[in-house]
Amino acid sequence: MSDMSLRGERRDVSPSVVVQEFSKLRDEGYNMLVDMTCVDYMPQKKSPRFDVIYRLMKLDALSGQDLGRLEVHCAVDETPVLHSVKDIYPNADWLEREVWDMFGVKFADRPDIKRLLMYEEFVGHALRKDYPIAQRQPLIGPKSGDKAGSPSFNILHPTITGE
Amino acid sequence: MSENRSQKTYMLNMGPQHPAMHGVVRLVLELSGERIVDAEAEIGYLHRAFEKHAENETWNNVVPWTDRLNYVSPLINNVGYALAVEKLSGIDVPERGQYIRVIACEISRITDHLTCIGASSMELGAFTVFLYMIKAREYLYQLVDNLTGARITTAFTRVGGVKGDLPADFAEKFASIAKEVRTAVAESDKLLTRNRIFMDRMEGTGRISKEDVIAYGITGPFLRSTGVPYDVRRSHPYAVYDKLDFEIPVGTSGDNYDRYLCRMAEIEQSLRLVEQCLKQIPAGKHSLEPKEIKYAYEIQDAGKHGDTALLAKYQAKVDQTLAGMSKDDEANTRVLDRKITLPAKETTYGNIEGLMNHFELVMWSWGVRIPPSETYFAVEGGNGELGFHIVSDGGDGPYRVRCRPPCLFPMAALKKLLVGGSIADVIPTFGSVNMIAGELDR
Image (cartoon, rainbow over all chains, first blue to last red; front, side, top):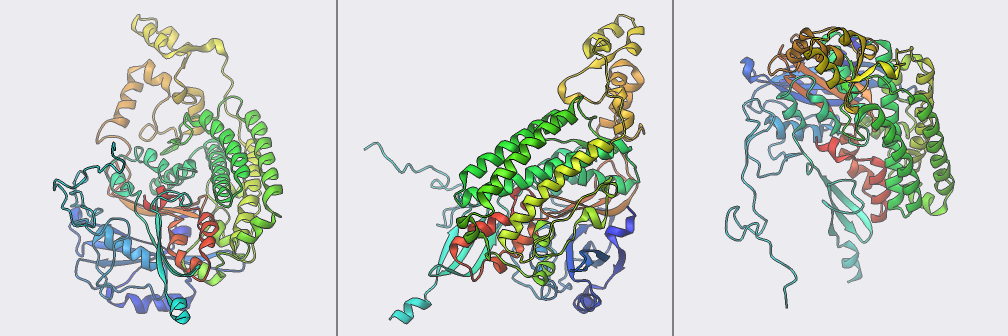
């Protein structure tokens, strides 16, 4: 149960070359993107603020053995310098959406990226350290355009009347 | 005219609340007749901000939150989180504690698979199988209840060990329950495995190739059904899995039917694993004579009256939720480091040092502290690799907890699985993905 077996070696990659680096790694045999996540180091005043972590694995399809893992770190801030790797690892599509949703890390070639877990009207990025845990967001109205808080919003309209 | 009609597609919305959606999830399908042309899954309806809450809790207080990730196998989440934190701080749990963790994990894996097969076969019309499987699962939940004090919200592990030792007659109870589970599985096997209707719906549907399944990062029974025998318990043995003998069932074609067969075979392997554990587990001092037990309040009252001789002589009889936390159990199941694990209940109730120790561990901004570091640890969950990426900044709680939810990955590949099939295939395919909304949305 050594520390290295599940984490693998750490490699720091500049966000501008992330696509080239990943296609190289893919050719080296890292065929599975196990996970992708982000850590916000704002309270520690690190610059750049975010650390995006990709976790790769060489999986041998025949023996099912894990032939080695790699932990790729990318330090980024809010400027969109990071590029998407979803053409290399298709599951990066959803994982990048989650990182954008929760941390607001932008991807230069995905300008209209959609949130994964939260709804489109949500303001801010919930897992940033400066997002207060008790923050409330207004109720969103129905698609009909009724504003939250307007008299018609959230009033139950009985479908069966007394007639 | 007819040509125009054949090219017309239309949208169909399945969910967020639909009888065949396991939990709250929305599928938007684009259909041409009955064929699925495009599919999109919309998730997040059960998002409860697990990761955000974990950042605002102490190390041990995150454990109850992990119950709510995969709520059909909560014990695996408990164990996965505890192992990750222990790896971060370099703690080694006593061997008996490790065996108890493996037993708990394997029981949970059985309940996970029973639920998955039962629910998805019910959606295909086999209601009897659902009843058989849920009955077997209920027996296992009773066992979990005996072990942890709760059926589902188990919160069983602690940093540095488990809540308590096995209950006194656990092995006998498990033996009789294993018989029930095997009967239920055998009966369901007779009803389903060579059933014409079932096979027509399952065979060849939701098929995915080995290359795609790896490219999408899918693990667990889903990956094994394509013939890749990857299992975290085998590749990176944690706890005592390297001392146990088990097989990794694999499929060949990667369709729904193979995934069903893999899960059925894994139930038997998990039963075997628990039986081996119960044979190998190092002896604990679990033989309390009833006369030595007094209610905790009696001991407390005796202490108040100055009868301190009684304190050392008797063991406290405590509420069921605290059972297994007495002095005799703690050395076997928890690390005896007073900066990490709570003292035995007799000590807490019986003397001032124990009481202070207890308070120092549970008080706000005190408690367990882990030096600044970062780690990733994974266990084999019911659905695949359940990983925890944990960062500590030296405080009394995690700085960041990332849970790698195993069912997110097949959900991300759902489009690949559904497109080209017919609308009726959505039900078995989605059932075999075994999406657990609590884990998917966190």
